[in-house]
Length: 60
Image (tube, rainbow, N blue to C red; front, side, top):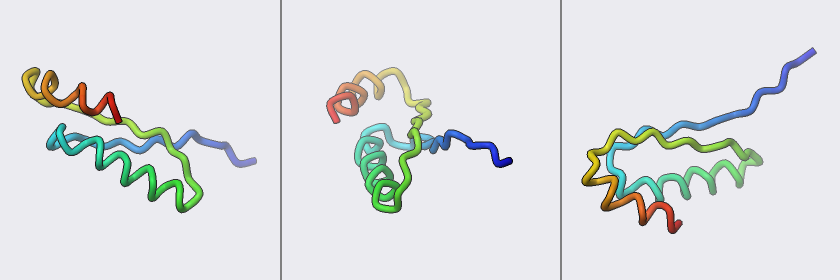
């Protein structure tokens, strides 16, 4: 009997400003290939960068 696993794809951030575009590209690639993993972003940006770029990410 094979166990089914929920697939998650984690993206560590290097530049928070690029995360939205990166997530969209990965999502499109997975979708075209019949996959739909949960995408998790790990962010260790400075609070200043989070304040600046996170609202833009939320709008995507």
